Length: 130
Image (cartoon, rainbow, N blue to C red):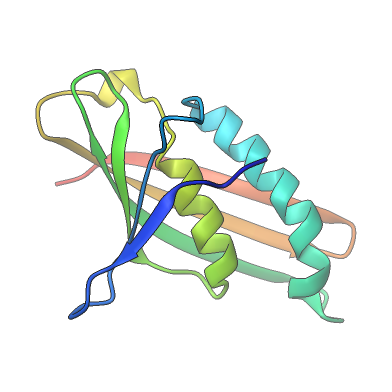
């Protein structure tokens, strides 16, 4: 799966944000969860390094257009893994959230993830920003 979302950093604040590309299709929250679980299946052995469990939570602020498409996902708080944060940001930038669309709409997405030796999981909580 191509993770072609562009990431930029503002010089003064080192803000990390992600924008969608035109090549990749929009996804739902359920599809984001499935994609993240698939990535965790590959990443968890590296993240565990002999531990019994590792987990993290990232908070993203989503700027949403009137059609419900995310136009920008900004990382407000990162997890212990920048690599997983980048996956979450790239996927969040591809989200289609028609119920939250509106002029200048924004939302907060809290993405939790966990790895254990025989399992991995992702949780997503979406709420209106404000």
